[in-house]
Image 1 (cartoon, one colour):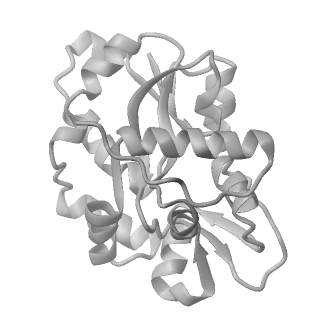
Image 2: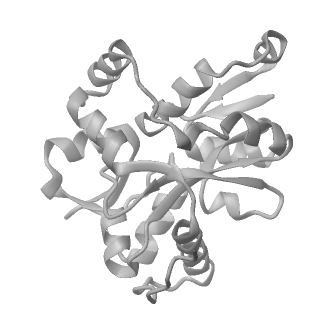
Length: 233
């Protein structure tokens, strides 16, 4: 089993979870990680160079993939997917969904994602447009930036990840401090980001947001506010 790994702070809780998961020794030895940026993992999964990964939400819509109700989600703001104000239009080559999101939202400027975006936003948020905040303003919905997709062994991955969204993952202090120093983001901001901004469970409104986003991208129209839809009991 080859799992694609994105080394961004927003997936740090998952990496801690998987490291602690009690896999049998033989199975753990066969469990490999391939590290890359989101756009590269999109291609690796498409060409079956890996078995599973969190891929861009727009990529996860392909019929060939088996998806779990697990993604990188945010509601109201995200801090790490930005457009820099008063700059020429420029895509972030490491992303797919974020570039498409900027386009359908009509946000003009340089797209920046990931830990670099998070560091810049924490330094001076007024210089940037938070694309999740703009999406929420226009649609009233959360946004799913990436979704867990696989080409095979969905039952095994579902079993491994079953409890991931049901427990709070404690990140060891030394790991948090290492990320803070390496990414030039204070540890307090990282904790806020992971505890209050990012979440992982894809529910009813996240599925609705995915459908709205994918439809907007496919038919090249800009987003408007979604109708109020009651959450089913």
